[in-house]
Length: 235
Length: 152
Image 1 (cartoon, each protein chain N blue to C red):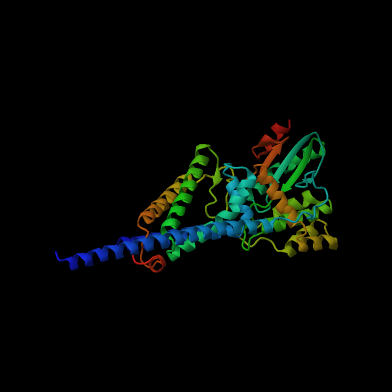
Image 2: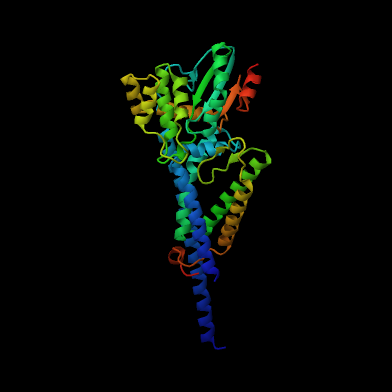
């Protein structure tokens, strides 16, 4: 082999090595940039969420429980916590099945009944958010001392999952039908005054490990949501 | 042929991560609750993970769709999928009854509803196979990598 051919070959090897080296360097730089983009995306998500957190001075309805997450409907020695979502069909069923039992226990002053409206099904209406809007409206009914009545009326007119939910006008009308004729109730519903309170309720419930509705606690212990179990647990 | 296969893998992964991210991004608090329902971490940590995850999934989908830093994106996708599979398997093993929250929703299932763990895991393992394939053959057709990294 002539020396000129050898030199050519050597040059090619060097060129290829340089090209490989350049590719490697570029790959590293691009990878670092992409990794940074992924980290930034995560931080953006965190920041967006932090901005959505309810303001510290959110409005709380009358008759709210000590930790401001529920509406206290009666007083008695045994505490019954009922976590509900106004869109949840099983909550409606539980409420219907246990309505007379609950009324009985309340009348005999046997239980402290605390309703916890939470919004875990906001994504199940189109547009989303009915759980929050309906829960906020229930806070307005609590202000007027008619939370349990309004809850029953809302469940009687419960919209289907996947539907648009009820409008503000319908939520007001349901109140009017049970005697909430005061203009302040209608205004409160239309203002969505207690939607931040709903966010607080939902968050607090999740922090206690409540990931479903209906969830029923008797003196802090979860029971299966049936009338029989409720009676047995209350004793 | 392999390069076209890689392109298909990229697009399939991109679409799935985009749908998964998009379904959660409108309800970040709900996404945090879906993570909390796995009962694998304290609620405060789950909230942060749940808020960050949809955005990471969307960014990952963009990288995969563009074919930019494909090997890194495929590696991250594989890592996420391994975490998802392990998390779902652990929920299954502990006898919990939840919605995986993979595409929004999430939380405990109502009594009587049956969880879908088997098919969730099958789906994630199939996607994991695509991600691993892409990790080992990251140079694909129609990828930005072909322009910025130089010809392979």
